[in-house]
Image (tube, rainbow, N blue to C red; front, side, top):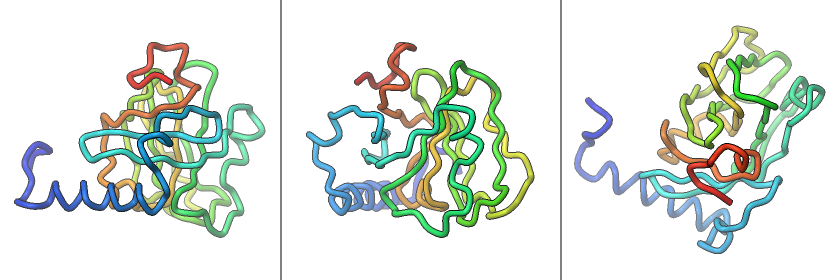
Length: 167
Protein backbone atom coordinates (compact mmCIF):
# COMPACT_ATOMS: atom_id res chain seq x y z
CA UNK A 1 0.00 0.00 0.00
CA UNK A 2 1.44 3.40 -0.96
CA UNK A 3 1.90 6.15 1.56
CA UNK A 4 -0.91 8.20 0.03
CA UNK A 5 -3.46 5.41 0.40
CA UNK A 6 -4.98 4.53 3.75
CA UNK A 7 -7.81 2.36 4.88
CA UNK A 8 -10.98 4.33 5.66
CA UNK A 9 -10.75 6.03 9.03
CA UNK A 10 -7.07 5.25 9.56
CA UNK A 11 -5.92 8.82 8.89
CA UNK A 12 -8.56 10.25 11.21
CA UNK A 13 -7.53 7.83 13.98
CA UNK A 14 -3.91 8.97 13.60
CA UNK A 15 -4.93 12.61 13.68
CA UNK A 16 -7.16 11.92 16.68
CA UNK A 17 -4.29 10.23 18.53
CA UNK A 18 -1.94 13.13 17.76
CA UNK A 19 -4.51 15.65 18.97
CA UNK A 20 -5.15 13.64 22.12
CA UNK A 21 -1.43 13.32 22.74
CA UNK A 22 -1.02 17.08 22.28
CA UNK A 23 -3.75 17.72 24.83
CA UNK A 24 -2.27 15.22 27.29
CA UNK A 25 1.14 16.86 26.92
CA UNK A 26 -0.45 20.27 27.51
CA UNK A 27 0.26 21.58 24.05
CA UNK A 28 -1.87 24.43 22.80
CA UNK A 29 -1.21 26.49 19.70
CA UNK A 30 0.65 29.07 21.81
CA UNK A 31 3.00 26.46 23.27
CA UNK A 32 3.89 25.19 19.79
CA UNK A 33 4.77 28.72 18.68
CA UNK A 34 7.56 29.10 21.26
CA UNK A 35 11.14 28.21 20.31
CA UNK A 36 13.77 27.26 22.89
CA UNK A 37 16.81 25.02 23.21
CA UNK A 38 14.86 22.81 25.64
CA UNK A 39 11.97 21.93 23.33
CA UNK A 40 11.35 20.71 19.81
CA UNK A 41 8.05 21.01 17.96
CA UNK A 42 7.11 18.70 15.10
CA UNK A 43 4.42 19.08 12.48
CA UNK A 44 3.19 17.12 9.50
CA UNK A 45 0.05 15.78 7.87
CA UNK A 46 -0.50 13.81 11.08
CA UNK A 47 -0.76 16.97 13.27
CA UNK A 48 1.66 18.63 15.70
CA UNK A 49 3.52 17.62 18.85
CA UNK A 50 6.08 19.04 21.24
CA UNK A 51 8.83 17.27 23.16
CA UNK A 52 10.94 18.60 26.00
CA UNK A 53 14.50 17.78 24.95
CA UNK A 54 17.95 17.59 26.36
CA UNK A 55 20.35 19.11 23.87
CA UNK A 56 23.47 17.10 23.01
CA UNK A 57 25.55 19.54 20.99
CA UNK A 58 29.13 18.79 21.97
CA UNK A 59 31.33 15.71 21.65
CA UNK A 60 30.94 14.58 25.28
CA UNK A 61 27.16 14.99 25.41
CA UNK A 62 26.72 13.23 22.06
CA UNK A 63 28.97 10.34 23.14
CA UNK A 64 26.94 9.74 26.33
CA UNK A 65 23.50 10.36 24.85
CA UNK A 66 20.79 8.41 26.67
CA UNK A 67 23.11 5.66 27.97
CA UNK A 68 22.28 3.97 31.28
CA UNK A 69 18.79 5.48 31.58
CA UNK A 70 16.08 3.08 32.61
CA UNK A 71 13.16 5.18 31.39
CA UNK A 72 12.20 8.45 29.72
CA UNK A 73 8.90 10.35 29.94
CA UNK A 74 6.74 10.04 26.80
CA UNK A 75 6.90 13.79 26.17
CA UNK A 76 10.72 13.90 26.38
CA UNK A 77 13.64 13.18 24.11
CA UNK A 78 17.22 14.07 23.26
CA UNK A 79 18.22 16.24 20.30
CA UNK A 80 21.72 15.57 18.95
CA UNK A 81 22.97 18.55 16.94
CA UNK A 82 26.17 18.65 14.87
CA UNK A 83 28.30 21.54 13.64
CA UNK A 84 27.69 20.74 9.97
CA UNK A 85 25.58 18.32 7.91
CA UNK A 86 27.19 14.88 7.63
CA UNK A 87 26.53 11.14 7.51
CA UNK A 88 25.32 10.18 10.97
CA UNK A 89 25.48 6.72 12.47
CA UNK A 90 24.28 5.74 15.94
CA UNK A 91 24.31 2.60 18.07
CA UNK A 92 22.64 1.48 21.27
CA UNK A 93 25.71 0.66 23.36
CA UNK A 94 24.77 0.93 27.06
CA UNK A 95 21.33 2.25 26.10
CA UNK A 96 18.69 0.43 28.13
CA UNK A 97 15.45 1.67 26.54
CA UNK A 98 14.18 1.19 22.96
CA UNK A 99 14.32 4.38 20.94
CA UNK A 100 12.99 5.88 17.73
CA UNK A 101 15.67 7.89 15.93
CA UNK A 102 14.51 10.70 13.66
CA UNK A 103 17.34 11.78 11.34
CA UNK A 104 16.92 15.43 10.37
CA UNK A 105 18.51 17.55 7.63
CA UNK A 106 19.77 21.14 8.05
CA UNK A 107 16.33 22.59 7.23
CA UNK A 108 14.71 20.63 10.08
CA UNK A 109 13.01 18.05 7.84
CA UNK A 110 12.89 14.41 8.96
CA UNK A 111 14.60 12.36 6.24
CA UNK A 112 14.68 8.93 7.92
CA UNK A 113 13.09 7.27 10.94
CA UNK A 114 14.63 4.22 12.57
CA UNK A 115 11.92 2.69 14.76
CA UNK A 116 12.44 0.75 17.97
CA UNK A 117 16.22 0.58 18.10
CA UNK A 118 17.08 -2.46 20.21
CA UNK A 119 18.57 -1.76 23.64
CA UNK A 120 22.29 -2.64 23.98
CA UNK A 121 22.64 -3.50 20.26
CA UNK A 122 25.92 -2.22 18.83
CA UNK A 123 24.89 -2.57 15.18
CA UNK A 124 25.36 0.82 13.46
CA UNK A 125 22.14 2.67 12.60
CA UNK A 126 22.78 5.03 9.69
CA UNK A 127 20.36 7.81 8.90
CA UNK A 128 21.67 8.98 5.56
CA UNK A 129 23.96 11.69 4.23
CA UNK A 130 23.79 15.42 4.99
CA UNK A 131 22.02 15.09 8.35
CA UNK A 132 22.43 17.87 10.92
CA UNK A 133 20.52 16.40 13.85
CA UNK A 134 18.90 13.33 15.36
CA UNK A 135 15.90 13.39 17.66
CA UNK A 136 15.63 10.35 19.93
CA UNK A 137 12.24 9.61 21.48
CA UNK A 138 10.76 6.52 23.12
CA UNK A 139 10.63 3.47 20.87
CA UNK A 140 7.41 3.08 18.90
CA UNK A 141 6.17 6.58 19.69
CA UNK A 142 6.76 7.96 16.17
CA UNK A 143 4.55 5.26 14.66
CA UNK A 144 1.85 5.60 17.35
CA UNK A 145 1.69 9.36 16.79
CA UNK A 146 1.85 9.05 13.00
CA UNK A 147 5.14 10.96 12.70
CA UNK A 148 6.55 10.37 9.21
CA UNK A 149 9.50 11.23 7.02
CA UNK A 150 8.91 14.74 5.72
CA UNK A 151 7.71 15.99 9.11
CA UNK A 152 9.23 19.32 10.11
CA UNK A 153 11.05 20.14 13.34
CA UNK A 154 11.09 23.58 14.88
CA UNK A 155 14.16 24.36 17.01
CA UNK A 156 16.80 27.12 17.11
CA UNK A 157 19.44 24.63 15.84
CA UNK A 158 18.04 25.00 12.30
CA UNK A 159 17.97 28.81 12.22
CA UNK A 160 21.09 29.20 10.06
CA UNK A 161 19.85 26.97 7.22
CA UNK A 162 16.59 28.46 5.92
CA UNK A 163 14.46 26.17 8.11
CA UNK A 164 11.27 24.63 6.77
CA UNK A 165 9.53 25.78 9.99
CA UNK A 166 11.37 28.86 11.33
CA UNK A 167 11.36 30.03 14.92
